[in-house]
Amino acid sequence: MIAKPIGRGYTIFGLTALLGVGIVMSLGIGPVEIAPLRIVELLVQMAGWGEPANGVDAVIIGDIRLPRILLAVLVGAALAMSGTVMQGFFQNPMADPYIIGISSGAALGATLAIVTGLDFWFFGLSGVGLFAFAGALVVTLAVYAISLRGGRLPSTVVLLSGIALGSLAAALTSYMMIAANDGADVQRILFWLMGSLASRRWEHVHMVWPQIVVGGLFLQFYARDLDLIVQGEEQAQFLGVDVESVKRHLLVGATLLAAGAVAVSGIIGFVGLIVPHVMRLLVGPNHRVLLPSAILGGAILMVGADLLARVLVEPAELPIGIITSLLGAPFFLYLLRRRGGIH
Image (tube, rainbow, N blue to C red; front, side, top):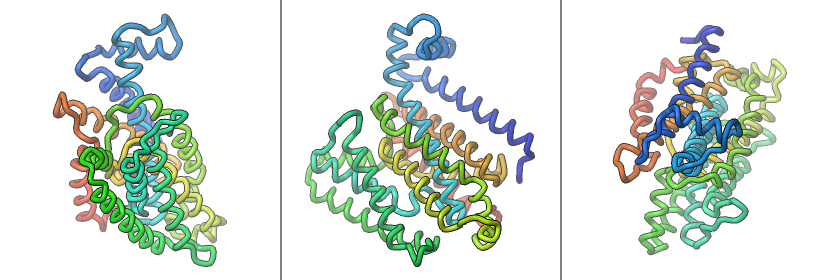
């Protein structure tokens, strides 16, 4: 089912409105309930209009809930857009942002930081986040170096190299957890591996928003080329696309988005798999519309999942990766069953 152009506009407008409603709801729900109108008033005041925001409500919204929810928006958008690009890159509907070992590399980096005591904050940058980001990039660079064949980047070789190096990184992570022999460190590592936005503050938002925004704009620039590559690399080459150059740029952009998201949230699965398919049903396969729609869809999913993670077992909190996996695993099985009908 491909949406009509006018339907696409209405769909994007509806997604934007739904995201706004979800953000306001999430800001209001918690141990201290805050009315929607009060939330809107506080947001307007924080934007610099009217009287300065003050009071307990202002502290709860501005210092605790708002940065966490904005981070959920950024992480969801990054994972969904990265997943959309990866599915086009590999021309495979089962691809996701972690398919080339990004998550395993990030897990290895984060584990190394935790077990060696490098969990520091330096100029607003988290040691665990930096090591996770570096680990994701190192694995991706290794995949790229191994897969390059005479200036070409065969998708199958990239995929197989990613699986092999991801398995190696996962094995090293497991070894470090056993060798650490510290229950507190192992618990922190496991919680990080399950993905969470707990205790996230403005420092985490500032750490990744420039990278995610720039990466998203960069990938949007290649939307038309990605449309042609999905139809076949030979046809795209015939139509004037420098396929190998575009593929390298797509791989770099998608990796930066996924690595940035993982660095601040841990490993949150299935967002980059679910959202592209749902958005493709709503707006069609044109990536100039599909990519921004995926951004909105990923943000909506993450805001909703984060809200469920906070309220399902109050006063405790579930790792958000559990919520997305509970949603994503049945959807993945559905895709496997219906694979012949996926476009």
